[in-house]
Length: 126
Image 1 (cartoon, rainbow, N blue to C red):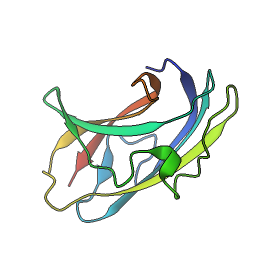
Image 2 (tube, rainbow, N blue to C red):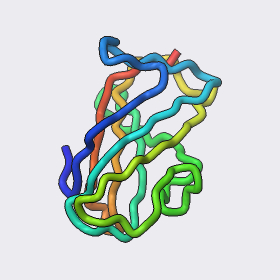
Image 3 (spheres, one colour):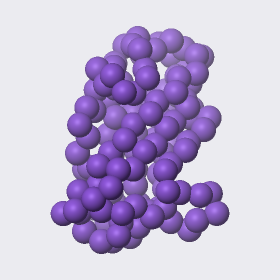
């Protein structure tokens, strides 16, 4: 669910919309891009990623969760109301990650931890 924004497009590497689950291989990079539009001006944006296993949210480590400071994200802060932004990131899937089915929850929050956008999708880590 989203509160302070809406997403218009999501592209995930190694994932087709026809797939039941996105397949991610340990020891490789996974890329994702999100187009979204905030409903209000936003000065700071933090990315948070969780893998839900048996309903327990397990945080995925991001190299730079502060989207405004990530030179590869393609976002310049502050964000302006009703303007579309294109976020891109790549995350390394460590070999130590378990081989499991998992629901991925990817969210952007502002400096007050209010949700800007939230995306959830089923995945399998192999």
